[in-house]
Image 1 (cartoon, rainbow, N blue to C red):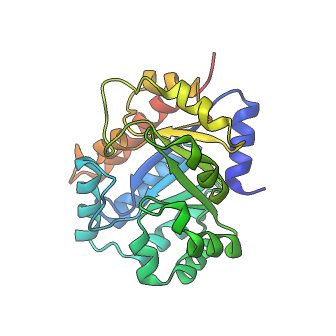
Image 2 (cartoon, rainbow, N blue to C red):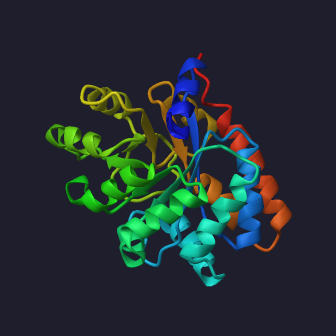
Length: 267
């Protein structure tokens, strides 16, 4: 079993959802990012989702756009992102997935990129702007090198496309609970139960829900319905709020992650 499969099997046995934490790799700089990720992994995170810094992050709201900009301005490259994963692998076996865009794979050569990701210790790749119907090169490379694929289903996805998306997916389905871009919202979307149930009629893959989730109460709401809960902007805000003070960034992220992770246990 892959690390992702083992994680979802364990959380299912523990009657809880998996807590998936997103941060941008290299935000605000490599050394701070490394410490921050290690703090997250020690604070109850089941799956670490690393945003690969990109100059045109179309799926991201302002919080995550600025995080990518900070990382790029401070020297993050594909090679440095792989190095970050290798450093994290020195002390952790927690699954790590890349949240990325197709151009970053294409520009580096899809097979070479996936091979390098696997060698670094990456468990899965979510390519935000890649439709499964056009993903043959990525899915083939991931299959060859033993990297899981993660694909997105949105509120606007018709039922007829779900089997196609599921067939291209080996890790988990990422249900984007809101139309639009990433960002914290005051309330979770109201259609999550129906959407997850609809997805589950087409696949036995785990379903993780993200976009707009930022508090322990919201995590608990979603954890009652899904196999995983993804939180991003609320964690990235911890970096933004303490720029220039590495210790405060790390402490804030650890505290926020621990608080959010407490919401995944079902009653």
